[in-house]
Length: 379
Image (tube, rainbow, N blue to C red; front, top):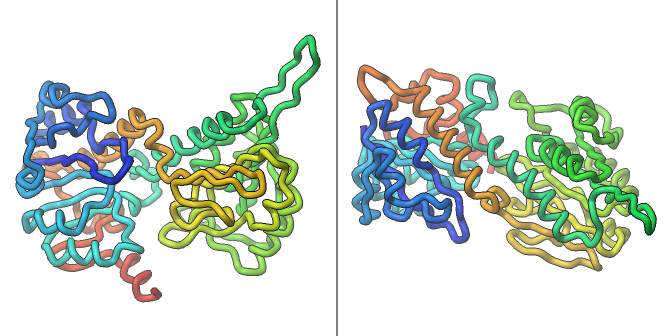
């Protein structure tokens, strides 16, 4: 089986899908690996590094993509490049299937089997393939580093001959993978950290990391089978906004992480709440790329609203591109290794497997993912 990896072309993307160490693993499996020239430039890996790992290097992008039995990317491809894929090929990358119906249907019409990395189930068995979690973990770290750099205060308490400097107060809104890493990072940097989440069961996790849990009585809330928070009712959203709106002015840094996969992010900080915040407050809106948790935030921009600095950068993992690439590359490699048929010497995604049923979108010229089709029907 020939595995090919083209360069990422999304503006500003610094991560790469495969690092040389993973190439070595794939070659050891028996795969032929070919990469586009310059693939690893943004992560300090040269063409020679890939050659030393066992890959061949191709400067012709179209020829490369057209020759692959299995094509690996990070970002979703342009539709015109899907047409370059040969019939029967497999393609793995982020695909945003709920919002990219035309792209998914293009894969189907091209006779290409497409796997969406966002759709990998959050199960113990699939944990090593879970790119959403691996990248969110790094995003949570970066969000705190960004805030620490932007705020005009210091995060830790300092006792000096001139007096004691109080620690900065940091609030993390949303205690998923990104939120937990943000809590841990801010705590290690010496801030006074508090966190809130609609799921009461996260309180123990927050406390275990040395932070205080800010509880808001929303009545009964639920989680999905994958551990994500279910969307709140309009009444619950209102209660959450009213309760937290009174508290936001207490903090120097606020990091919001609330996302609903495939849907616009919920608004948890409104304009009237910003008006009550202290000038100099820094907010990192980690959901800015899906509409934002903060009213007035803009994707991939940094804006000032009444003295409050709102950061909406949409590729936080890309700011630490080397480890982010290593982790994504590992996610891909674990998936390929898990479904590698040693007798056939190829990647064989079993359609009966629970993991594949979760993330396989197209096969044999049709869209086969039931979850995706049901969402499309509601749109």
